[in-house]
Image (cartoon, rainbow, N blue to C red):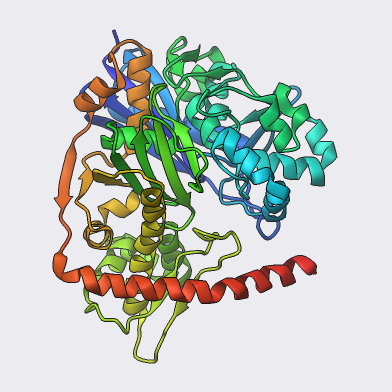
Length: 508
């Protein structure tokens, strides 16, 4: 029996390879950065061959850093960002990869929702069309690039492409396919009726064989072994939608537990026994075959800080790095200098679309001449948490009880954000011990699939732990409630402006 489990976490630009022992201790890790390609406004793509090169390099570096025999790796699991669209051609060669930050399909999403069709889709897959959703993007290609559409051989999600390159087998699994709206729920099956509602009745043959997350979908082949340094024959399991992986890797497993991820996306998800039907919740995903995650999400979280830091503070990155510091450390330090006040500026964290409307745009409001970048950063930090609160309140309105919250993602490592989450949400917030929760969740799945760990529940107890706990400060309740109400009022006032702005852009 192998001593280690390898978890891969493929995000929109970064892929990480993390090696764990069977207690969840991180042995080694490596990551490789890629780049998004933006050929047109709203188009966010990547090079699939580049993704595979990055994966190979990260895995090799991880194995080398650990100084282990790769034959000691018992199994591999991969998590990947959900939605977007990853395509092979009919010869099973890379064709196109669209990332989950892409917004080209805004009009298609609206068209698919017209005439009550969104209610039909909601009843079938528990989500409505939205611009970066996999079937909505596929429908966009069918309408706008029929030649490309006719050349498609396989529709994948991000981590499915990595598993394909590792094993040579086409596969996907239920967490990702349910999370992208391509499975009938709660049955977790492909459906011709569902595809027809997306105007994709001819696409059923493009979908790969469907597995459970813990099913072994293949074994590392000779070509992949040479590319990665892995041993030929190492089992590869179906893997996980990355937000499900992060929930598992942070310790979220029981009904009523919430996993909040402050990363590129604002992810707010709660474990339930049965999915909520006929609701306006963003999506649901299968969890472990017996439970589900109700999910409210949008690209409105810590990605806003990344944008601010790189675009508005980029000149300081080099000198900080040379001194062993980080631009994000500086951002946190600046926020800590700000005295909370009602007159501080507000920020809508919608640079990649909104929590309530795809037309929303990011913006600072209420700026005055005495405000500096520290005040703007405070507004940004607060606005991100307000965005999460919008999602959490929608979950609660639909009857979903939240007993506790485990926070993960890059934002959880901030000395500011966890307490701000506790104060604004009014609930105890725990921060997971593991930094790489997505990779750990994928490794847990690999361990269960390889038969080393008997169940998800026992595996989570064995391989995860909590680092810190933050309690809400009652003295701040009214302050944040007043700020949140003003945040909402500004948003409501801007909705008409955002819609007019989008109409004028599309009319050109």
